[in-house]
Image (cartoon, rainbow, N blue to C red; front, top):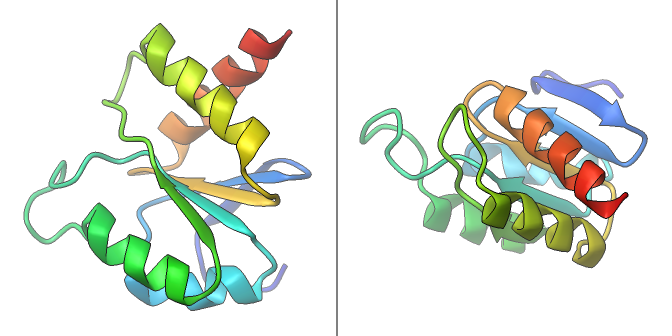
Length: 117
């Protein structure tokens, strides 16, 4: 995968990234992703952070399925883990999830997989 985006594979159908913006969604789609999950609460980094609404419009315009599941850094509640597991069942893959660094999305994904077992 040749891209300048900060993408990291977690498994064959799930990748994570640091903060993405509306300007990245066309490239995400061109790379073959079918879904995007935004795990970063709006304004976590201040007013300059792209909002859920702005990214959603660009993602959908690029033909991506987009979901907003904001989670705070550190601890993921059982409800947030269950919501991520439901998204994994619902969304067409491959899926790209993002947060501030990608770590939060990775931990949420791993917890969701454990919930399925």
